[in-house]
Length: 303
Image (cartoon, rainbow, N blue to C red):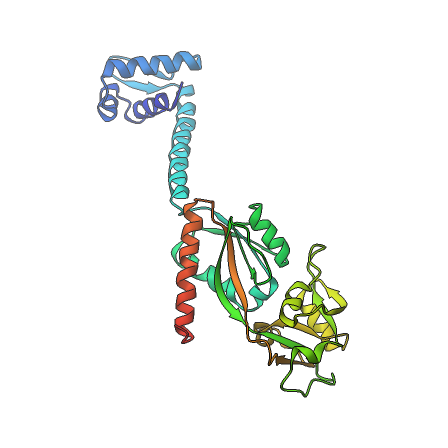
């Protein structure tokens, strides 16, 4: 018994005429009769009452008709879903992101752009620290990671697409002795204690700051999220280094943000993904992100 038998039976059940059903199915009537007989033998009973003048479904045949029709519909739906999924028209994208990316609006902007062209796609989102994001992309727990990737050594399997570049900002309490200093240098901060964002046991929160300052910072507190970093700085516990986007998205009373006069580089915010995964949905998402980045730069007058 297979789906062919279901199709043959449904055709006869809906026409109640073996001749017309055979024409619809493009097979000979004797062959159709044999297939229906085989189906009845497999099921262990009669599906039709047949006379020389009419064909009727038995009570069991009526019940089997509903189930056979549902089975065929499910089969056809499965084919459609499979075809759409393989074309990248359906599916789920697992995206990990760092907190600063969400605060700055990058994540929402990218998702909005992709949903304009693929509204049926679902997103599974998870906020993580950059180290766990990099690990998740590597072991395929995430399809994509969006985070500041400037302090990572990428493996050959990982590709990155730069989305934006942010300048670092020193954030201090408004009551800090250096708060009125408009021109701040890395050397001026050597004696300062830092509040760092360390989102996991693998991340001590100092690698990015060390790269910016060119020396090992003295850590006075490790916070698990960016809001806590800012709250501790506002309370005078220490100072910190944050992306410039935080100045505008999470600015709080009692804080001042200062650029570093002797650090001219920027922090790249990147989309990371495995380049050895040949999946249409991922390819479409990458293409959409590239278009969004180009469009955003054009709107900002950077093209």
